[in-house]
Image (cartoon, rainbow, N blue to C red; front, side, top):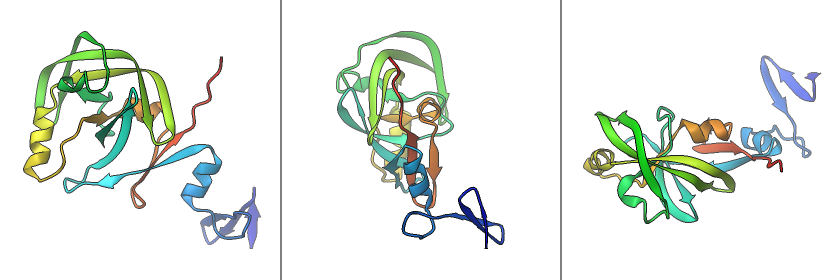
Length: 173
């Protein structure tokens, strides 16, 4: 057996042992590195979905690594206690282009135990997204968790175990 930096190396496989001498799982490793583990649900359309809170209000979202920003349906601004304002940005995606958007600033998002403050959210009409989901008998969503959150949270997605890992944010005052 060969050890390197606390890891056991066996035929090109690396194992790190927990205190009880069992191989450390990805979840064990990431929790040790101060990541929060968030369960994902795989939909019939092969999207990952999850629960999140916007300004303390629970919502249902799809995770979209290709979406540059986290978005909320413009019709849900009141539900999520958002103060929206006009935006010059045009949205595109999922077959729709040049969609008008609004924006909300200073938003709080909570995903599992992970929290982020002062988030900038994009609001636009998600009816085309929800129509496509409903056509496949999938629950409509309140919004989309995009790459901005994944980047802020130093995200790791475990596709096999259906888990999203977001790194604990250290607040410096």
